[in-house]
Length: 211
Image (cartoon, rainbow, N blue to C red):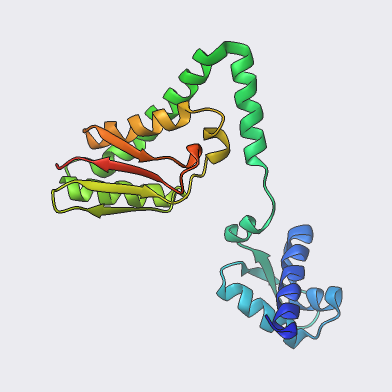
Protein backbone atom coordinates (compact mmCIF):
# COMPACT_ATOMS: atom_id res chain seq x y z
CA UNK A 1 0.00 0.00 0.00
CA UNK A 2 1.38 3.40 -0.99
CA UNK A 3 1.63 6.23 1.58
CA UNK A 4 -1.14 8.05 -0.32
CA UNK A 5 -3.51 5.06 -0.13
CA UNK A 6 -2.65 4.56 3.54
CA UNK A 7 -3.42 8.21 4.26
CA UNK A 8 -6.73 7.98 2.41
CA UNK A 9 -7.66 4.89 4.40
CA UNK A 10 -6.80 6.63 7.67
CA UNK A 11 -8.91 9.65 6.70
CA UNK A 12 -11.93 7.47 5.93
CA UNK A 13 -11.48 5.70 9.24
CA UNK A 14 -11.43 9.07 11.00
CA UNK A 15 -14.68 10.02 9.22
CA UNK A 16 -16.31 6.79 10.32
CA UNK A 17 -15.13 7.30 13.90
CA UNK A 18 -16.46 10.87 13.95
CA UNK A 19 -19.87 9.73 12.71
CA UNK A 20 -19.86 7.00 15.34
CA UNK A 21 -19.13 9.50 18.13
CA UNK A 22 -21.31 12.38 17.00
CA UNK A 23 -24.03 10.83 14.85
CA UNK A 24 -25.19 12.61 11.71
CA UNK A 25 -22.82 15.30 10.43
CA UNK A 26 -22.57 17.51 7.38
CA UNK A 27 -19.60 17.52 5.03
CA UNK A 28 -18.73 21.00 6.34
CA UNK A 29 -18.68 19.75 9.93
CA UNK A 30 -16.46 16.85 8.96
CA UNK A 31 -14.22 19.22 7.03
CA UNK A 32 -13.81 21.48 10.08
CA UNK A 33 -13.20 18.56 12.42
CA UNK A 34 -10.47 17.00 10.25
CA UNK A 35 -8.99 20.14 8.72
CA UNK A 36 -9.57 18.86 5.20
CA UNK A 37 -11.20 20.76 2.37
CA UNK A 38 -14.88 20.14 1.67
CA UNK A 39 -14.13 18.77 -1.80
CA UNK A 40 -11.75 16.18 -0.35
CA UNK A 41 -14.27 15.23 2.35
CA UNK A 42 -16.98 14.70 -0.24
CA UNK A 43 -14.65 12.45 -2.24
CA UNK A 44 -14.02 10.32 0.86
CA UNK A 45 -17.75 10.24 1.63
CA UNK A 46 -18.45 9.08 -1.93
CA UNK A 47 -16.00 6.21 -1.48
CA UNK A 48 -17.52 5.27 1.88
CA UNK A 49 -20.97 5.38 0.29
CA UNK A 50 -19.75 3.11 -2.51
CA UNK A 51 -18.51 0.64 0.12
CA UNK A 52 -21.88 0.69 1.88
CA UNK A 53 -20.51 2.26 5.08
CA UNK A 54 -22.01 5.76 4.88
CA UNK A 55 -25.26 7.10 3.48
CA UNK A 56 -27.12 10.40 3.23
CA UNK A 57 -29.62 10.41 6.08
CA UNK A 58 -31.37 13.76 5.71
CA UNK A 59 -30.98 17.48 5.15
CA UNK A 60 -30.16 20.16 7.71
CA UNK A 61 -31.81 23.44 6.87
CA UNK A 62 -30.61 26.75 8.24
CA UNK A 63 -29.11 29.98 7.02
CA UNK A 64 -27.82 29.55 3.49
CA UNK A 65 -27.98 26.40 1.40
CA UNK A 66 -29.39 23.19 2.94
CA UNK A 67 -26.67 20.70 3.91
CA UNK A 68 -26.85 16.94 3.50
CA UNK A 69 -26.42 14.90 6.65
CA UNK A 70 -24.23 11.82 6.55
CA UNK A 71 -24.52 8.83 8.86
CA UNK A 72 -23.25 5.30 9.24
CA UNK A 73 -25.06 2.31 7.77
CA UNK A 74 -25.67 -0.91 9.68
CA UNK A 75 -22.83 -2.46 7.69
CA UNK A 76 -20.39 0.00 9.27
CA UNK A 77 -21.21 -1.47 12.66
CA UNK A 78 -18.96 -4.43 11.81
CA UNK A 79 -15.93 -2.11 11.88
CA UNK A 80 -16.19 -1.60 15.62
CA UNK A 81 -14.98 -4.16 18.18
CA UNK A 82 -17.51 -6.52 19.70
CA UNK A 83 -17.12 -8.96 22.58
CA UNK A 84 -20.16 -11.12 22.05
CA UNK A 85 -17.91 -14.15 22.50
CA UNK A 86 -17.03 -13.19 26.07
CA UNK A 87 -20.66 -12.44 26.86
CA UNK A 88 -21.73 -15.82 25.44
CA UNK A 89 -19.10 -17.70 27.44
CA UNK A 90 -20.01 -15.89 30.65
CA UNK A 91 -23.71 -16.63 30.10
CA UNK A 92 -23.03 -20.32 29.46
CA UNK A 93 -20.83 -20.55 32.55
CA UNK A 94 -23.66 -19.04 34.60
CA UNK A 95 -26.21 -21.49 33.16
CA UNK A 96 -23.89 -24.42 33.90
CA UNK A 97 -23.26 -23.19 37.46
CA UNK A 98 -26.99 -22.93 38.08
CA UNK A 99 -28.23 -26.09 36.40
CA UNK A 100 -25.24 -28.24 35.52
CA UNK A 101 -24.62 -30.04 32.24
CA UNK A 102 -28.34 -30.80 31.87
CA UNK A 103 -29.12 -27.08 31.69
CA UNK A 104 -26.50 -26.59 28.97
CA UNK A 105 -28.03 -29.44 26.99
CA UNK A 106 -31.49 -27.90 27.34
CA UNK A 107 -30.19 -24.54 26.13
CA UNK A 108 -28.61 -25.98 22.99
CA UNK A 109 -31.66 -28.14 22.35
CA UNK A 110 -33.93 -25.08 22.53
CA UNK A 111 -31.64 -23.26 20.10
CA UNK A 112 -31.68 -26.25 17.73
CA UNK A 113 -35.47 -26.44 17.75
CA UNK A 114 -35.74 -22.72 17.09
CA UNK A 115 -33.35 -22.92 14.14
CA UNK A 116 -35.20 -25.97 12.81
CA UNK A 117 -38.46 -23.99 12.79
CA UNK A 118 -36.73 -21.27 10.78
CA UNK A 119 -35.04 -23.61 8.30
CA UNK A 120 -37.77 -26.21 7.76
CA UNK A 121 -40.04 -24.00 5.58
CA UNK A 122 -37.10 -23.17 3.30
CA UNK A 123 -36.42 -26.85 2.63
CA UNK A 124 -39.98 -28.21 2.67
CA UNK A 125 -41.16 -29.91 -0.52
CA UNK A 126 -37.79 -29.65 -2.27
CA UNK A 127 -35.70 -32.41 -3.81
CA UNK A 128 -32.51 -33.36 -1.96
CA UNK A 129 -30.26 -31.30 -4.26
CA UNK A 130 -32.38 -28.20 -3.66
CA UNK A 131 -32.49 -28.87 0.07
CA UNK A 132 -28.71 -29.09 0.35
CA UNK A 133 -28.28 -25.93 -1.72
CA UNK A 134 -30.84 -24.08 0.41
CA UNK A 135 -29.23 -25.25 3.65
CA UNK A 136 -25.79 -24.14 2.43
CA UNK A 137 -27.22 -20.74 1.50
CA UNK A 138 -28.93 -20.36 4.88
CA UNK A 139 -25.73 -21.27 6.72
CA UNK A 140 -23.71 -18.81 4.65
CA UNK A 141 -26.17 -16.09 5.64
CA UNK A 142 -25.36 -16.94 9.26
CA UNK A 143 -21.60 -16.60 8.70
CA UNK A 144 -20.59 -20.24 8.13
CA UNK A 145 -19.06 -19.66 4.66
CA UNK A 146 -20.76 -22.85 3.57
CA UNK A 147 -20.55 -24.65 0.25
CA UNK A 148 -21.55 -28.09 -1.02
CA UNK A 149 -20.50 -30.66 -3.59
CA UNK A 150 -22.64 -33.24 -5.36
CA UNK A 151 -20.79 -36.51 -5.94
CA UNK A 152 -21.22 -39.10 -8.68
CA UNK A 153 -22.73 -41.63 -6.26
CA UNK A 154 -25.52 -39.19 -5.42
CA UNK A 155 -24.11 -38.18 -2.04
CA UNK A 156 -23.21 -34.64 -1.00
CA UNK A 157 -20.47 -32.97 1.01
CA UNK A 158 -21.45 -29.92 3.05
CA UNK A 159 -18.42 -27.84 4.06
CA UNK A 160 -18.35 -24.93 6.52
CA UNK A 161 -15.17 -22.86 6.24
CA UNK A 162 -16.00 -20.71 9.26
CA UNK A 163 -17.62 -21.35 12.63
CA UNK A 164 -19.37 -18.26 14.03
CA UNK A 165 -19.66 -19.98 17.43
CA UNK A 166 -16.14 -21.41 17.52
CA UNK A 167 -15.37 -19.87 20.92
CA UNK A 168 -18.38 -21.69 22.37
CA UNK A 169 -17.94 -24.98 20.50
CA UNK A 170 -14.39 -25.49 21.77
CA UNK A 171 -15.59 -25.54 25.39
CA UNK A 172 -19.09 -26.90 24.86
CA UNK A 173 -19.10 -29.82 22.38
CA UNK A 174 -22.89 -29.96 22.80
CA UNK A 175 -23.01 -27.07 20.30
CA UNK A 176 -21.54 -29.30 17.59
CA UNK A 177 -23.70 -32.27 18.46
CA UNK A 178 -26.89 -30.24 18.25
CA UNK A 179 -25.70 -28.67 15.00
CA UNK A 180 -25.31 -32.13 13.48
CA UNK A 181 -28.77 -33.14 14.70
CA UNK A 182 -30.23 -29.90 13.31
CA UNK A 183 -28.98 -30.73 9.82
CA UNK A 184 -30.27 -34.29 10.11
CA UNK A 185 -33.68 -33.03 11.24
CA UNK A 186 -34.18 -30.51 8.44
CA UNK A 187 -32.81 -32.82 5.73
CA UNK A 188 -34.57 -35.89 7.10
CA UNK A 189 -31.52 -38.14 6.76
CA UNK A 190 -28.46 -39.18 8.82
CA UNK A 191 -25.20 -37.31 8.24
CA UNK A 192 -21.60 -38.35 8.82
CA UNK A 193 -19.32 -35.66 10.24
CA UNK A 194 -15.86 -35.97 8.69
CA UNK A 195 -14.07 -32.90 10.12
CA UNK A 196 -14.62 -30.34 12.86
CA UNK A 197 -13.09 -26.90 13.45
CA UNK A 198 -13.58 -27.17 17.21
CA UNK A 199 -11.32 -30.24 17.23
CA UNK A 200 -8.54 -28.61 15.21
CA UNK A 201 -9.85 -29.16 11.70
CA UNK A 202 -9.62 -26.55 8.97
CA UNK A 203 -13.36 -26.81 8.36
CA UNK A 204 -16.53 -28.57 9.48
CA UNK A 205 -17.42 -31.17 6.86
CA UNK A 206 -20.49 -33.38 6.63
CA UNK A 207 -21.29 -36.23 4.30
CA UNK A 208 -24.92 -36.51 3.23
CA UNK A 209 -26.16 -39.76 1.68
CA UNK A 210 -27.96 -39.96 -1.67
CA UNK A 211 -31.49 -38.65 -1.58
